[in-house]
Amino acid sequence: MNLGQVWEKLVDCICRPPRDVYEVAELLGGAGGRFSIGRQLCVREDLSLTNAAGQQLECSHFRPAEVPEQEPLPIVVYCHCNSGSRRDAEEAALVLLPHHVSVFALDFAGSGRSEGEWVTLGAHEVGDLAAAVAHLRAAQPRAAIGLWGRSMGAVTALLYSQRDPSIAGVVLDSPFSRLRDLMVELAEEQKLPIPRAFMRMALSMIKRSVRRRAGFNIDDVSPLDAAPQAFIPALFGHAERDSFIGLHHSQRLFAAYAGDKNLITFGGDHNSHRAPFFYASAVTFLHSALQCRTPLPRGEPLVNPAAHLHTRNLADPAGFHAAAGGDLPRQLSVPWVRGDEWAGSLEEFEEAWAAEVARGAVLEAEAGAAGRG
Image (cartoon, rainbow, N blue to C red):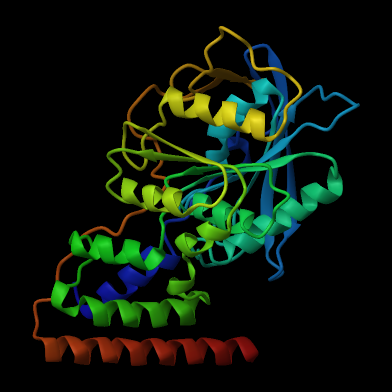
């Protein structure tokens, strides 16, 4: 692997991970947007919003087909991970809809079917989430709103909730505490193709390149700095064998978080199906935080969408059924995978990286000139 390939690989891992490419018909409810969970008929409404940067965001609102007229249903906005999309909101929809909580999901800019090229790991996704919440506030002013995020989405939810005290509660599944700390940890575990002796300089160069390319500062993506000013009730969840974002990230955030909080751990890794206990805890927490009027059923176990919950797409008799246990069929978050290390001297490394910096600046200048033309 030459330095050019290393450079592109590292920057892409941060701000251009693999994009989840899918058709609308693959969303829960299929092309017709109608499905059932047990005996409950549900619908999906697809819509588009525009963020502050003028980018179109593709969204879906999952809700029971029959909605009481007197009181609006509470809403949970699902925030996906760095290589995910609104498809991932199925895990929340399948456990919340039976309890009369609707789920709103969006493809962040740069993800799924939304416009945009770059993923910013929470830096700009906060603005996309703000656009979604503003839409829901305008459409249903009296509805209680909660957030549920996974990985990058959990970071986005935490950062946003610290700014919006009207949010009722947040479920934070495997957030990182600081992006820079995560990068250093992955590098020390030799998952970045850079020798340790060159790591400080390399991270500094990557930081500058990401800022030029995607328009955000890695150092600014720091939920740990926001946690002491966050007072929204929060449920933290983290897999005990998470080898991408270690459990200690949630533990650090939990210790610093100022609001009412709870931390639960469960088996599995970063991309594993979540345990039934986690889903039961999330439903119970959100039911209380959103002040749901419909009581939770007593003596009836809450279901795990990965193992127990069957749904049927009314337009597709074959229906949908998530496989029990194991990893998810799609990888939700993309770790920095180990590649070939640089074998040259420090001087050669410095020269090579400097050349890559210069080459990147020329390419960006040419692209800017072409855009103005």
